[in-house]
Each structure stands twice: as C-alpha cells, then as structure tokens.
Image (cartoon, rainbow, N blue to C red; front, top):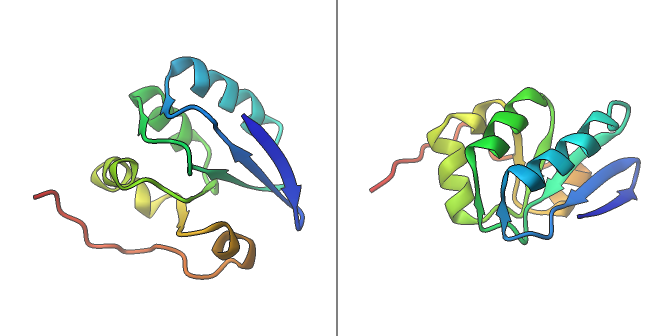
Length: 109
C-alpha cells in the first residue's frame, strides 16, 4: 500500500489486485488517521474486492475513489455506492474536484 500527499490531499494506493479482508484491515487503519485530509483511494491496481471492503468503505462517508476497474465499478454501482461515494475517473479529476461520476444509469446485461 502506497500513501502520498498531494495538494493537501491524501492518496492511498492499494497494490494488491484483490482487496481481501487482510488488505481491508490495513486500509481501515489508514482511513482512521485521515480525518483532516481530503482522502482518495487510487484503485488502479485493484481488479476485485470482497464484501469486507464494501462494508468498510460504506463507513467512510466522503471518501473518494478514482481509476476504478470496470468490474469493481459494476460492484459499486450495483450496491448503490455510487450515490454515497465520490467517484472520479482520474487523479487529476479528484485533485481538481471536477468530472465526478454522479447519477450514473447502470445496468448489468
């Protein structure tokens, strides 16, 4: 897991392709320490996640995600988390607080 500060924002990058319960536990510890910073998860390495990750991310209102894999995006939107989380396409969009993915109509075919 990589953590770096950029423009008064904390960006956490999980390096595991699957966010398991162990990875989620480590991520949770980092998120607890991020109250004063604007925080985002760079999901560029993540290809899959477990229900532990989904439950954990629900508890952190205001967290942002970007570089989201299409499979993970499908999970997030099917569980209506796209309405409570801040989803962005890229890191630049997150840093500039522009082009947020909101009110997306999504259906699984």
